[in-house]
Image (cartoon, rainbow, N blue to C red):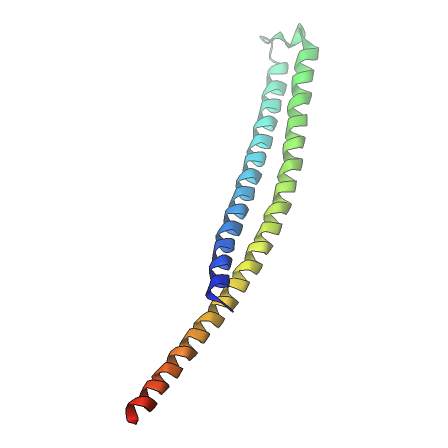
Length: 129
């Protein structure tokens, strides 16, 4: 196990964490868009029966806007589900890379400690002669 591999894995850990954060951000954006679309649909439905609204003159426009808002909501929820799966995958990947980094880091540190102990023993042996 080399120190170079440890450095590469450390960079990969950072990359995997960023990728996970990216997918989490996209997931939350899709959820927020779905929520906004649903609120818009409910607001349009609430105004539809309002006596002062133009819904009596243009009911098809209101129905189309309500249907469009619900379609956007459904689309955003589907996208949020996809991103949730990507978050889960990224979490698993990040966990595996972090485990590999810890293993390599431990091995490199043990190798360095062994080397240092051997040097101390050699110095004592050459110093005693």
